[in-house]
Length: 159
Image (cartoon, rainbow, N blue to C red; front, top):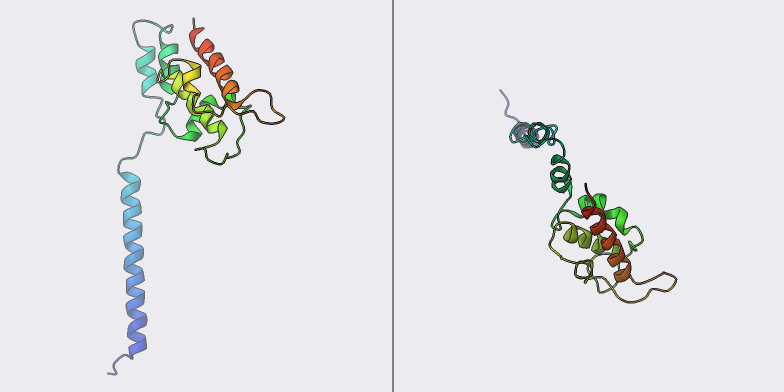
């Protein structure tokens, strides 16, 4: 019998190492896919309990709409989807020296107001710039306050 050469042994060892790593990756992927998987319809578990309440369907509209509104600590895409229509007139360009865009600041202000973190539109929009921008009507702050007042009015008009 002849012994294998040094290069052949390296190739075999590299092949075995790659095979072991590949098996490990597949095993970890399969275990994470089956462990802790959320339900396919997260809202479906809440609907039967809300409709089976003794109060009827009148009280469920307010509780489900409040539960679906993202709070001030939610991610920006979630807030933008919920409150972005109120802030459409805000710029989406970054301003030097400020955290976030005027749009993202406005969306966060709407979430604060909707969830009671801020008590008035003025305090909710306090982080917005009060400087006039050429070619635009009002300041980012004033547009935010106007939008927040409309949001607050629409929240209080539920029957």
